[in-house]
Amino acid sequence: RAVARLFALVNVGLLFLTDGDRARAAGVLADVSLREIFQVGFSRVADLKTAAAELARRYWPDWVARGFGFLEQDEAELMKGLMMRVPQYYGGAATGRGLRDFGTMDEVRMTAQALRELGAAARACFEKLGIPRPHEAKAALAEVFALGPEDITLGNLMLTGFVNFTLKGEFDIAPLARKDAGRVLNDVMAVGSAGSAGLGGRRVRPDRLERFLIWLGESTGFAPSEMEALSGFVRKQARGLEAEVGGLAAAEDLDPRYVRTILFER
Image (cartoon, rainbow, N blue to C red; front, side):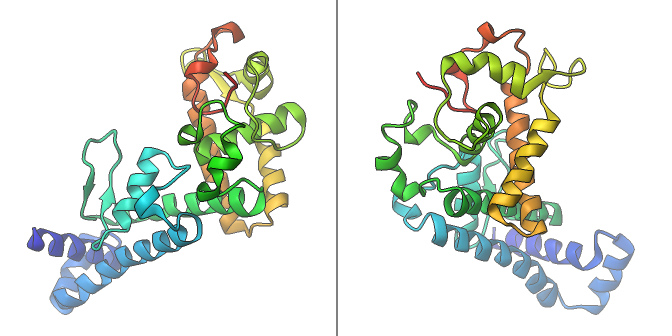
């Protein structure tokens, strides 16, 4: 296992130094020691751990005892993997591969991008938009959300805020009423090309989403790079909404009990 880990990080270092060019890699292997290549690979992975540790310190200071509140399972596992003594790559529940050593620069890049998006979303929610931080949330949210704090994530908070922003003209994380189901499908979403989202092809209206992103940029004051990361996070949540309810034909087909991308009252 130790040898496998060593060569996984050598591979990351070699890929970083050569951008995957095999001819250049042969030259690097001839001219640079494996120790130095390993150190390059390890530093790339160590940078991810540093970024994850800073996120945990700011927003999940008691994560060891209480976990990563407001994170989806995959996001929480990604953070746990990076916080290990030797940072681990999390391939996602869908792959069934769990935590393992980093082996490619693509894995490093994807994890770095996920951290950037997660960090931007956490800073927007907890520092700019006034959403209670996870360790403060139980008392503040217990009487507000019908689903209970354990079912609330950064994703559905942000998307609920987007839907309320579209329907009411202001950002609000309060759960939607059942009567709002029709407006979600017709005002927030629209039927697009066949197969574009779910069986019915409903997609989030691009103009509504862009208006919300402009408001987020103005409200957070984020620099372009951080706003790009936040936009990536929000767009991913919008795709999740399309996957969840995009195939519905009518409002009466939307049962709030089974919707998780946005919050509804019971």
